[in-house]
Amino acid sequence: MSEYHIKRTDKVITDNNKLMSVLKSGKYAMLSLCRDNEPYIVTMNYGCDEKNRSLYFHAALEGLKLDFIEYNSQVCGTVIEDIGYKYGECNHAYRSVVFRGTITVLDDISQRKKGMDIMLNHLEESPEDIKKKFLKDDNALSKVTILKLDIEEITGKEGN
Image (cartoon, rainbow, N blue to C red; front, side, top):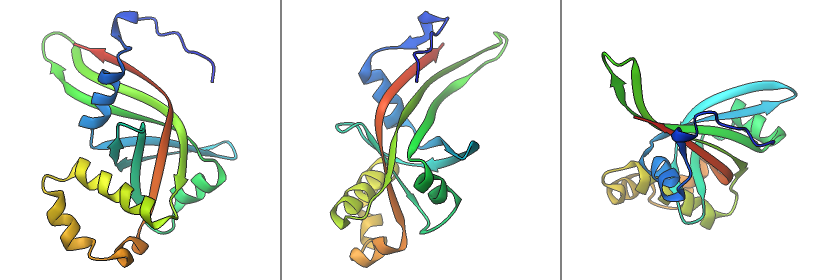
């Protein structure tokens, strides 16, 4: 995709640590998918693997998003950190990122375990309790689809 010029350069986040901070603090991402010029957007919770610049998602074993991903694995998404509307100022404080990358369905059991582990560690206050309750054996992972999105490009903005 061609480079888009942001007019308000004072709002651009260029620091990679700040960009990753938005992903680490978020709980859900909006993913934009496309098939035969038909757009589809879906909101999903996720886990962030900062070291490898990847996001992990879980889904049902079949469904519309999986049909779209099978057709076109290129994804654009966003995560927004809503800091709050500033009453009386007609302004809103936020940080947001837009990312592009390739999303894949994980088949390898060790990769599926890693993805679920990253998601639970990201989302849960007590991930070990949830793992003991719901992930007693490898069979538990056969009931869900685990997706991995490798981030190839990320940009960000912030407003105070």
